[in-house]
Length: 193
Image (cartoon, rainbow, N blue to C red; front, side, top):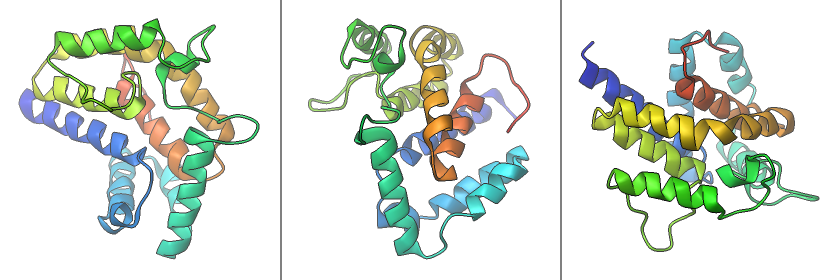
């Protein structure tokens, strides 16, 4: 496989995982998203995760409602606190706040590579935006920039987020997605799930 093809495949995976963190809707499920996730797990040989994914409700309406509830509880709003806000600044030591100097650092990194956020876009350290940025770096063959971004703007916080999702997820879907993000952003290739 050529380097360009490998870079494009990794970019596609980053985008897919970023979309997996979007608020679920019927079009998302109808587009075969779960089938694609199952295929990725099978290709990686993550048999346990594949079995867990099959434990999700089969009826589309029931599954959609369950994923919406889980997404809201994990990432948006829960009592007494949101389980795992998908923003880097929240998970840094001494963090817990949004839109910090770390967010500005992430935005500055984006700008160095021509990635500008639209007015009204989410904060720069929002996980799906970071995955989109990694996808664009991959498509451009910017391997050194990708590694620098991961080291400076992604890995410092992602472990805390991962731990919260692992501990707080009630359905396997988001935990599996976050485990995949961890796998595809590690410094060194490690054994899967």
